[in-house]
Length: 117
Length: 112
Image 1: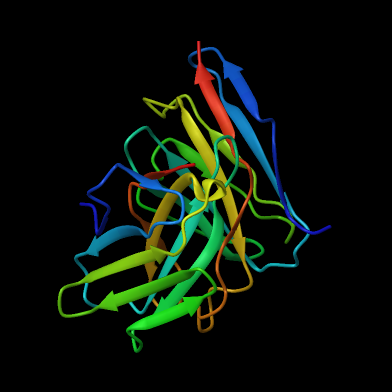
Image 2 (image 1 turned 90 degrees about the horizontal axis):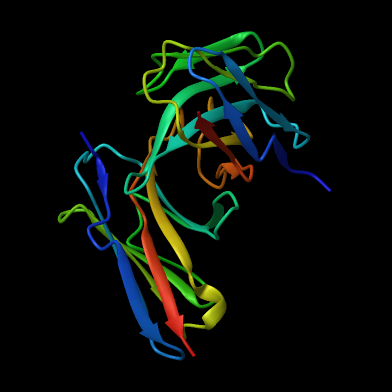
């Protein structure tokens, strides 16, 4: 049963600590994305990756870091530099972002809700 | 700057009636538009899409209309069912698909 798995579902951390959110997909998708959702706002792109060992900043990359060492995995680290990290984080993947996007919608995980104590 | 906007945060419709969800965008270069549906505590799931070269796409009870001159798209659900109650996001992108731009969502409630 293919899909995207985000873990954990809920995460609590103290201020000043880095925290890493996991995202794994077994859809054999090339492209992966991280979004942040805040109340009353749409999904905002943090980082995306089109292929292994390559990633690009999105609109709100400051205070975040990612890696793409494997096709299946795209972990997101929320660093202490992120001023307002409390949010709902969504990971997504799609077949490829190099080619025509028609009929290649993104598939989303169920999200991780991060709260800073 | 929000390039995709959904100005109605919520909508209530009686079961069996039509639900119309609206979305406006500012960038006329967008090539492709999508609608996603999201239940609480779950990620969004793809619902229907439309290319900028078309003005209508239909899939069962769901139809998306695109008015490029007005930079406006809408999602029609007919007939509406209680299971359609969810938050609906519209999104826009370019053919390379590097970035998807999402609206703020409209919460639809279908009343039995």
